[in-house]
Image 1 (cartoon, rainbow, N blue to C red):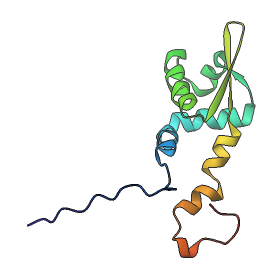
Image 2: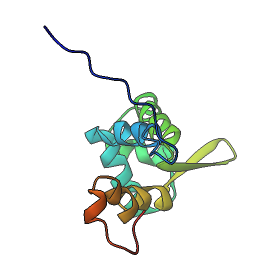
Image 3: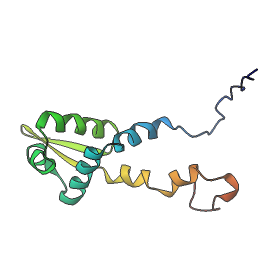
Image 4: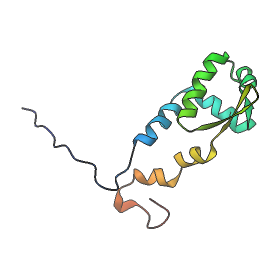
Length: 116
């Protein structure tokens, strides 16, 4: 007989993993990683110029840009009829931050300073 596990309610101050879910889903694609890399190298880039760089049609590129934008990994600025995209460095650095790394450390193994 299989014993049911008890449901544990979220404790006050628990970590909200949902904010990371979309970001990591957005990162789990080679084309989106390539787009982010190109934005890192080139800075603010017009979507019209990005199509040639990543060798995608504008509609396919727009699909990937939308996912990255919704995840907060890139930012968009509209100038006239064109959209320019750039990497959201604060958000990307946050994913690579000690704060996120600390979430997955045992409480006893966390440093006393510089960690969540």
